[in-house]
Image (cartoon, rainbow, N blue to C red; front, side, top):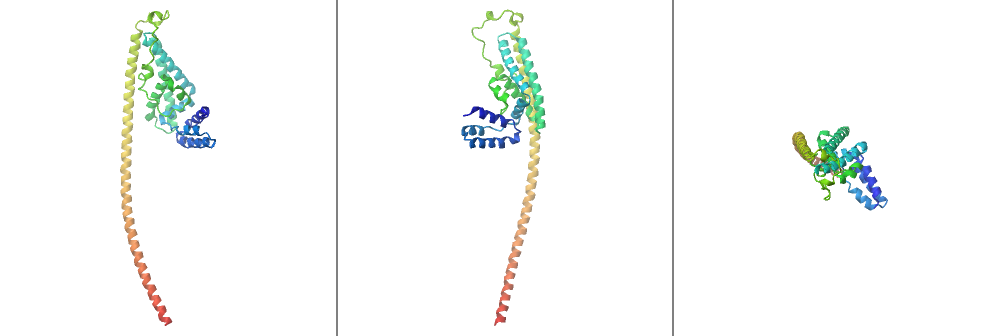
Length: 286
């Protein structure tokens, strides 16, 4: 399989407006089949139209590549700082790295809001998923390539900032590392409470995550309530229209029946007149 060709085709379709995705994907699949690249065609056919928040992140990768790269680099710095803080070192670096990631995500969120608004989508309905995806991408290197290329199909599943696995389930320190093996002048010597500070920072981040999740759920509930009311009104209007149509259909059926009966009556009268004409014609000939 030509992986470079397939990657190029995927990059192209994920850069399109959402309403053009399926048509252009299928057109390219057909073109690949015409070139006898059937494996590539089959793989491209499996590409799924991205959800709105995933598409917004894909657009960020194309419109703000430097900021997305900065986010991924900051996420790696955060992982490194968390490793150090977990062993009681580098609490200040952890706070700095955390702040950097949060600032970059905040900036990208604002840009995503503009992208969604320009596309005619409800930004408020999707920004939480966009934000969660950005935080998750920052600290999970296995997603870096997909996010950097802008070929994400679905939002990344993370528990919010502070609850992403990449932040909490980092590889442990090398077993050979000991307190004596730390470099001279390390922060542990200057700040023996660094481990406590790191734990406090994680606790505050967890509280912030829960508050963010609570606000997200409240907004989602409000959006769903509005959608439910709108849909209920649509259902009521549709039911009323259906009732009107049924009444009109009954009237039309009755009118059709009357017309049919009248047509049959006229046909019988016409046949009788024709019989009389034929009798008159035979009488003249006689």
